[in-house]
Length: 380
Ligand SMILES: Cc1cc2nc3c(=O)[nH]c(=O)nc-3n(C[C@H](O)[C@H](O)[C@H](O)COP(=O)(O)OP(=O)(O)OC[C@H]3O[C@@H](n4cnc5c(N)ncnc54)[C@H](O)[C@@H]3O)c2cc1C
Image (cartoon, rainbow, N blue to C red):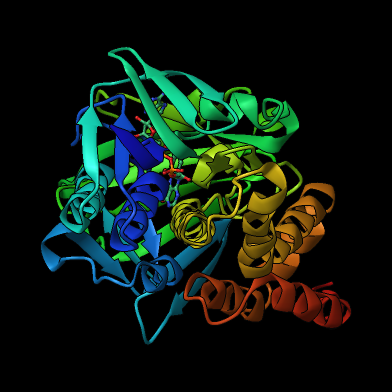
C-alpha cells in the first residue's frame, strides 16, 4: 500500500500530525519504534498555551495535578505567585502520549509499533521509509522522531552541541517528608550556571529534576543528588537524562518530500525548555501543509514545503528567537538579571502569562528592554 503521509515517531508532534492528516482524509501511518505506553523522560508539564493548541480537552483522568501557583527560588530569595487560572497541568508522558496516539487512530491513522526507522530515501515520485521490519512508501514523510531524529539526517546537519540542553530527573514518591506540599510548581534558579532545578507535583510522586545548556552540565547528576538529599528525598532514585534542542529556528526543517516537526526540528523554548507546546504547534502545521499541498497536487519539493518553515516562523519562530536572546542575556549577566527578577514581581508575572499563552516572548523582550533600567535602579 502507498500512503499519503508516513509519520515517523508517535510522540506529541507525530501523534498530533497524524491525527490532523487522517482528519484531512489522507492515508496516514505512524511508525513508532517503541510500544505505547512507552517510557519517556520528561517532567510532564503541559502549559495552558500548549493545551489551547490541541483543540481537544485533556481527559481529567489523565491529569495528575493542576497548577495555578508558582514558587521561584534563587539563593535565599523566594517569589510566589498565585494565578487565577491554571497555567500548567501535570501528566505522565507515557499515558499522555498513549492518549494522543489513540486520537490519531480514532481519526483513521494506522499505527505500527516496535518498528524502528533506519533509512529514508526521497525519490522523484515517492519516498521510501525502511524500518527494522520492512519498507513503506508514501508521498511524503513527517519526521517527528525526537531530538536524536533519524529522519533529520536527510534534512540538516546534527544539532550543534551549543544548541542543546541536558536535563536529569527522578520521580520521587510522595511521602511524609514533603510535609505541606501543595499543588504548585517550584523552580530553583542558580543551581547550575544558566540552568534550573524543578519540583513538579504528580499524583503519587514528585518530578524532581535539573537542566542546563550542555556547556554547563558537568556535575549535574551530583548536583541533583545533593538537591534531593537536602530536601529529605535521598532514597534510591533512578536518575534519567535527556537532551532538549534549544537553538531557535536557524536550521532547515524541510527537504524534498520531508518535513521535520517537534524536537526533530529543534523547536523548544530556549528559556524554559518547554517542548510539548512546539511539538503540538509544528505537528499541526506540518499536517496542514501536507494536506494543502497534496490536495492541490503541488510537487512536494523543498521549495514548496518551505511554506511550512515560514508558517512555523510566523506562529512561534520569532518568539523562540526572542526567547533565545533573553536566555543569552541571562547567560551573560546572570547576577544582575536574577537579582532584578527576584526584587520585583513583574518579570515573573510576565513569564507566567507566556505559559498561559496570554503574551509572547517578543512582547516580553520589549517589556524587559523598557523596564530593565527602572528595575535595576530599584534593586541596586
Ligand atoms: C528531562 C526532560 C524534561 C522535560 N520536561 C518537559 C516539560 O515538563 N514540558 C514540556 O513541554 N517539555 C518538556 N521536555 C521536552 C519534551 O519532552 C520534548 O520537547 C517533547 O517530548 C518533544 O515531542 P516530540 O514528539 O517532538 O518528540 P518525542 O516526544 O521525543 O517523541 C519522539 C518519538 O519518536 C520515536 N522514535 C525515535 N526514533 C525513532 C525511529 N528511528 N523510528 C521510529 N520511531 C522513533 C520515539 O520512541 C518517540 O516515541 C522535557 C525534556 C526532558 C529531556
